[in-house]
Image (cartoon, rainbow, N blue to C red; front, top):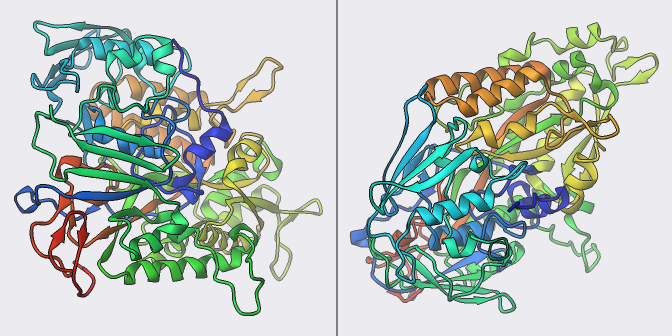
Length: 616
């Protein structure tokens, strides 16, 4: 069985939240493929109100904002969204879960232990020891059959997520809790497999796998069970799983409510939500019409100059809402500037390297993040986020720090007295593709435009909506420079390889970029990714990734800029919720504090009384 890959347009819609699209982010979604999304901001690690279980009340209801009721809870289907992934974390097992630095560690609720054969020993066999108490909601224990059915569903040429096609077999070991997974070739990033894990009944046949997963009666295996799924009414209701074997869920019920980003500040203010992602609500806030403005203001894309001011107003309002704390964290996503090596002056590697050296990453990070109250932390790696283990700034590999010398060498000379460089009477003028309506992208683009002007490069900004950003521009090659983000995760060798793989000839002999929208690559970079994906020694694997990153810098493919941010509004008294960074909620710990809040005692999902906002 093959899983269809997302089209470029569908990919843009699916992940538009990550870079200022029409939706908001619910945490890192492990989607079928690494796909780009138009650009946004970032900061540090997770910012979650700690959950001391002893101080969390037993009971109550939480109201949590979604962009919309997702079409499916199967994150491997093309219709899946970030909301699909968020709900799946409450309902389905993941054998490993990321810590705040993106390292995958066993989740003891599902996995007691897992061990791979040592480096150099062939074939690679991973032995999993499942939690003997782990059962699906119909009482069936988790078993090798579930892992094997998912392997069969997701394996196949060109299929994502990566890794399943490297598996030779899945068999039961010495007892029902022991599962042995044998690989036909070494696969270093095996910990990213089987998360989420679905019951065999949902993945064993093509018909079962392709069916939308929305029904409350189907087996799940999380601290919560699905009790209501109302797409028309915009609600998904989760209740405690009566067969849950782990620490009991604190909240009795979680109501996930479809609330568009532009309505979330009002919903928080009116006490209709308790947890609400606010990245898009702030970044894409519409400018407030003035008395002289038309009654119906044009969309943000039509008034980009007003977007940063509107975003600042929205953030100030969010921070002043009574009883609401705005949590901030670095999302698992790397915002970068991609250079189209197949068009105009950028076909010359010297010009690409010159532009890379001319980009002031700190200036850009400051412009993008400081207005949000976040540290201006520029990135120096294409493959790892700043808070991931093994991160290293490899930007010096781009070569000499003087872009003027490189541009002179390439024949692009600056007129006496300054101005835009030219060659043969043609000015060095480039287009910059930015996501329409994003305040952070606008600040980033303005800082980038000013910095390149200092180097004698003229830049014209072109705003594109999320629905056409990928398909009509990136995939079609209709741009010179582009701002967007790639998801960052614990498996960069396999997840990010398509973004840098050397374009191959299509049936007509023309280069086919695939997922490499920069359209530059080398056989050496491809080999380094492949070796890293197969290297079972962690230190050696990291060395190969660092070498690949150095080669990408030298190629002049793109410039990593910063991690984008998560902004999440959380009501006073709610613990275990916030901005999760690389992680995701531990839903059984999320609930209401047992202590009185500044609003008074907690009653169900509401707080009653009066008082000041929680600023702790």
